[in-house]
Length: 386
Image (cartoon, rainbow, N blue to C red; front, side, top):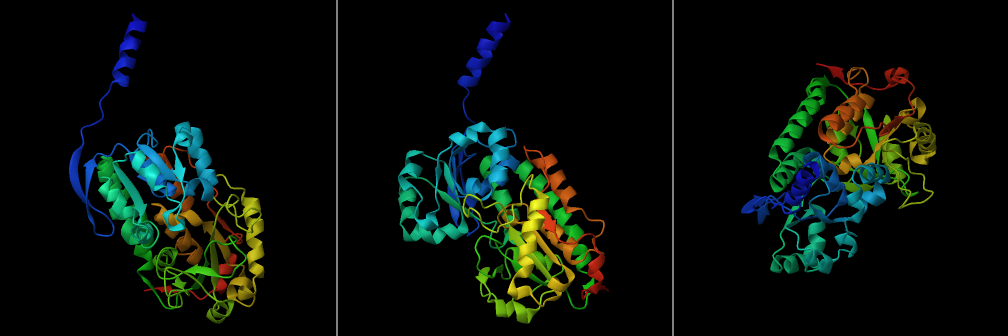
């Protein structure tokens, strides 16, 4: 009898009909109105790191609707990839491709897979238009929507999360996460709002160790905006003409930063043997701290207050291209204003985010600092409370 019941249960599962799809118009992050069949059943992720959000919405099986994805997560975030491939082995079977901006997006593969939608970061738009791929895909009846975690995440994460929620039919999950994010963000901005006086001068070194070049940074957008929200004076905000830029060492010497914060990560696949700091889930903090020390020797920082006071820290680079911006903002706030945020524990916030929204367990390893305690902070210029 039990075998008979099991047989019929398996038969029902094998013949299950997907949820009925309805053609609906959605608006993407470029303001384009796009007709899509919802909820989507077959999806191509134009960036593999979009899995960070897909996994929130489809916690039980984030691989089930993916028919192809870009290989950037596998290459630039191997520790997270290892977590997900162990939890969901079927992810390894999904076809991968390169980036459209490098001309390695496989248009024939995309058409043959017959996806309901392709989700692209908005910085890929120009390449897709210039190559004619956007037109070709439209003629094939394959819609593209553009999203953004990278350029203006603090503004664009909420509409991006809602758009994903609508596409996947998971609006309840999307709204729950945004409520969590909003509450955690307010823990920072409500206190920063009452500061007055000069703010600590912060220099963000972008992709620390990815190359020997000095010094890539963020302007007013992306991580640069995180610094502003965290109560810091991003010295590159008025020097960098765009979101991503490289400053001359002389410009940094002149700006005289009080605090230096690097974004970095485990880039062993992309830059074998580089000076990158292996941040990410389960990172070796002793090794991360050892590699961070080298950056204090850069000539650009030699005579800065940051160098004199040991104000060097590093944070996981992928915070700039994920829905997790609030974790980075909390950590920056704690480094920039340790007294004001002495009760804030970003590591605990990220642990709760994993517990409530993600299918993989939390492992620390996303932030590292040369400071032992907060004793040296009293030598820095500090804003005061109003």
